[in-house]
Length: 243
Image 1 (cartoon, rainbow, N blue to C red):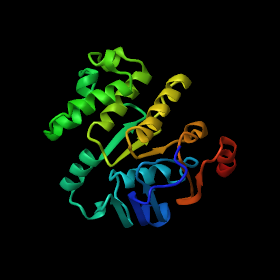
Image 2: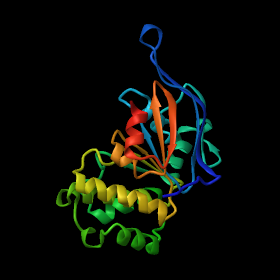
Image 3: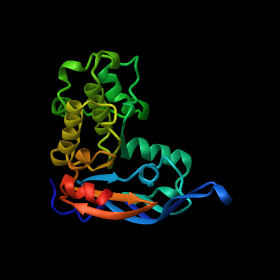
Image 4: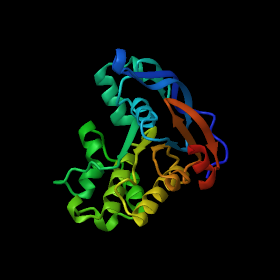
């Protein structure tokens, strides 16, 4: 694991607030949050249900609007982009890994991995594709459709798809939520290797302390604010921070 952060933020939240509803039903999901996520680092975001962790992830990935503040991906203020520009940035600069895999059932593994490049009309870098496929152990699974793959294998395909465009950051939303313990360990190891060996940046939302222990850094969110920012924490320390 990395012991110190890069000096380059790949994602930056500056005084970000998110309010849902109005009047008596108003809920403050994020309250004036400022935080940098660094390049080449694996960050986990944890917190109880309703803490704001998922809202933070959706906002930093450009999936949800914010009430006030700014969000930068690399040097681009995404809050200033038009919808079409934001869609392009998400496609080109953010890799997504979801709990539900989000694979196309009628496409085989290879087609699912290459789909974002196909939609963008971009040429496939065959060397990068081969490196990702071999790193994730998918060489013998490329012609299989999702229904012919285990949950762990489907998530490996999803990780490969997220890596194909060489994104600025990979955003993983509870990526082990639907997996057994063996497959969870496998997928977390793959995300760890993506950071260590492929120089990727990963931001993962999880409720699982063991999953968070794979990260270089853990942010604990409560009541719409970051209450702990931990590096090299043990599972016991993470459990204590969540209490």
